[in-house]
Image (cartoon, rainbow, N blue to C red; front, side):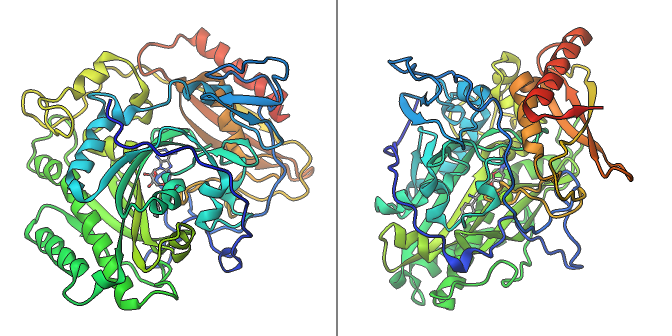
Length: 541
Ligand code: FA5
Ligand code: MG
């Protein structure tokens, strides 16, 4: 296994006060379609800007003894500390990592380094594309301080992404990193200027074919000294080279008409000419990456070469976004299986990030991409759970002729996943009344109380003040693991007289590897229902 460079454990630093100028920032991207209608998320929900109000939290078996990778030498205080990969963490009122996630930390997930795994192929293809100018790194230890994950990056204290409904906390000071941007400050502080960093990240999120609580991101960044931005200097030369290479290639059509103001505008401290050049460099770099990753496949599919799959033209679009640590900010989406799939977020690095890293006189950009999402599009992998399977029928399809970085199978074809089985789904519904602790009840189309996306994934809001649907999803995942293919809310009802609210979710049970008997599904479903009653205090209808 190649681990080019390991980042040392993060240290706990005092929390600086949140920047008042950022406290009003929205976490979720604000998608402005030309007609200024709210954009639909991949799941067809409205993606709202939202105003976050902290809410009482629900705990999943918060203080139960937790399994650990390296058992603590003393078992005298099992409920006050927990050990993660050999390090001890004090349990407190924020602790919310369920056993099903802790188990996955052993061994440290490293799919992007597993030979002939699709994520390994993709990581090395991206690293080779960027070439020797960019230093590839990994960061195997998944726990970071909240300072690194949030404060250093300008997330205000009441930012929804910080809520325990969205983030896995070991305790108030430490969490499972929710994005690779958590390593920006320390990486810049080490003097790295052009780098790529791959790591596993963790989020409490919905359950469907493109969301998983553990996934992998690659962070990339490039910063230049002010001198490099002079007319005819290094940045301009690189931009012109990349742009002319892109315009020579007619393979892809990339839609990019983002309004600068919608993307957050240039930062006050930046010379607008330099910032504009940084944006051009960012866009040319990432459009070049999109072309590298999807160009050949696009040609193959549009020339009718895709065996059996519906050949569709590849569409890529740039949209404005909001991240507390970049401005202007963007997201890139790819049209996949009839919907827009967001594959990365990016922008011009905030001055604050470089100040925290003690880097002076530099300006540049960063991006964070979801490896699974790109691999799904690239190799036609229909379900994000497949990345975790040990089934040879999956893994054998990613054997390449030349190993890392190759896009071709041993017989020279483009790698395209061929589903080996599709066992029948088994739907089970669960309807329940929300606990009557709520003072206000908002409808499901009101602004969400939650957003992870560091951040922009849309969430459906189910905001009775003590219910968050991520808690519901967590119970499902923690009970049935990968046997839940997706979970969809199918009913939301408020009783006209009592104002009590009830919700109904449909859980789709399906194994990727075998047939699930109805009896087994019933037993699983009963366990889920039991935990909903005991842990979330829901009243089943
Ligand atoms: C971020 O995480 C930012 N840190 C990205 C960034 C880096 C912006 C540097 C600016 C500068 P976001 O939450 O949108 O952004 O996630 C980035 C990508 O991760 C998404 O585009 C998507 O491809 C992937 N992703 C997000 N949530 C999930 C999930 N639950 N499962 C799989 N992939 C996900
Ligand atoms: Mg996003």
